[in-house]
Image 1 (cartoon, rainbow, N blue to C red):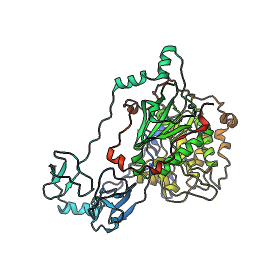
Image 2 (image 1 turned 120 degrees about the vertical axis):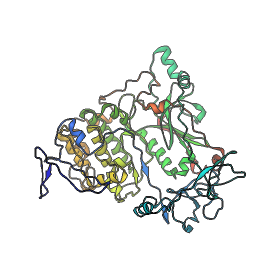
Image 3 (image 1 turned 90 degrees about the horizontal axis):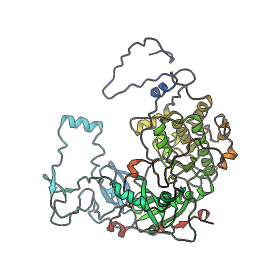
Amino acid sequence: MIFTGGGARRRTSPAPRVRVPARPHQRLHADYWLPGGVCGEGGEGAIRRSRGKRITQRRGAIKHHKIHEVNGHRFVAKFFRQPTFCAFCKEFLWGFGKQGYRCSVCQTAVHKRCHNKLLGKCTGSSAHSEATVYLRERFKVDVPHRFRPHQFMSPTFCDHCGAMLYGFFKQELKCEGGEAPGTSSSATPASTNNTDILEQQLEQSTAYDIFKKTGRFTPPARTIPRFRKYTVEDFQFIKVLGKGSFGKVLLAELRDTEYYYAVKCLKKDVVLEDDDVECTLIERKVLALGTNHPYLCHLFATFQTDSHLFFVMEYLNGGDLMFHIQQSGRFPEPRARFYAAEIVSGLKFLHKRGIVYRDLKLDNILLDFEGHVRIADFGMCKLQIYLDKTADTFCGTPDYMAPEIIKGLKYNQTVDWWSFGVLLYEMLIGQSPFSGCDEDELFWSICNEMPSYPRFLSHEALTILTRLLDKDARTRLGGTECMHGDIRDQDFFHAIHWDRLERRELETPFRPRVRHPMDTQYFDKAFTGERPRLTAVEPHVLRSMDQEPFRGFSYTNPNTTDR
């Protein structure tokens, strides 16, 4: 392949070799594409040459907190789980909620009043800078600590992060060349996988017992018994469906009934620590609103204990689209069109009520018992975005972020249509439209590069993808200055009868083959193999936790109770 001087690109056969002088760690990336913006080959071979990467793992959402930068430190507000002392004034960090700041780079803990008084620079901020690397190569100036296990005879706190050193014998580490004690890295316990206990939990299920005796299949509950205030003792947890930093999603059955649900369990200390109380209450509000729409996840009730928050939601036993795309590679166009149309219906419902979803991705689209989609996980939603009102929070899943979010610009509901374009691209092609070896490179690709489109795409699919992945939010499909009309009027959706779709009258292209009421075959076995139990919160953390922000959280949705 050679490049002509005028900027045009042409292929020659055979292609001559090209030598390009390059420094170490530099890379040269070359693409070719033919007129029309499609890859040079049709079929599956085109996928391997496109810029994106194959979808092999789940991708988590991110939300940036306010950062206070002082001498290289990057301080963020922090809720400390244990007694902690300030690294500056050596006094105790006390109070409710977030008692102080912690550097996200070096873990230094300080009072909010002390963070701007630190004179020392962050020990990790310049560790990998060009100047530091150059000096390290010439002079051995960074003599490391010689940490050895040490037994402290009195209560001792880490001089760096302020945490208390627990234990009776050889509690933590101490440098042989100094007096500063420090904490060692904590090992992560392996997840428990006890088949006998899991089988016992399943046998105790009323719905499963009835199925074994009569063969009658009880579908997941769509209502919940009314006139009742629910507690954690009312539910029997059977399996783990999902897990993350927020907590767990458990398959649970209402005791002495055939009703079974998905219960999302959040740890209150994590919610407080991440300053996500408002997001949690917004999620509850949007979930309750979703019961008025067929393609949004439905909420039945919420309740709480001193340590956890619980969302009782419908159990969507078909799994999420991430699971199915990993099994299939990519979806046929009719199947992708069906899922896309139901997602459009759900997004339109949210946008009409001033809600920006901001976390649309394969992981958050689940299939119900019949194979219809449900949009789930509303923790990233922004409310009250009407007319000229906008948002500016940097949040979302990196692969699905719109260019205006990455650039720090004001945005509105059009960011959801960009994410929808990425999701549709992944369903049709089986890989992401943009990629990078790290987050910065990925963001650069999203803002500057154009995705590649293989030849097997239909003209209608190619047209709607290019209109959705328009980097200009104003002219993007769904934008204020878009000249292509409503998304439902696009040729790609010409086969969709929207009125029948809103009434759930269209036949689904795939129906989950569920063997029994508690079947979890469409969920990740890394989760379903764990014991279904709540993570305990340490007593001292529980005592110091402020319960006031969660007042009024418990709720039973009147729209989903038995008539």
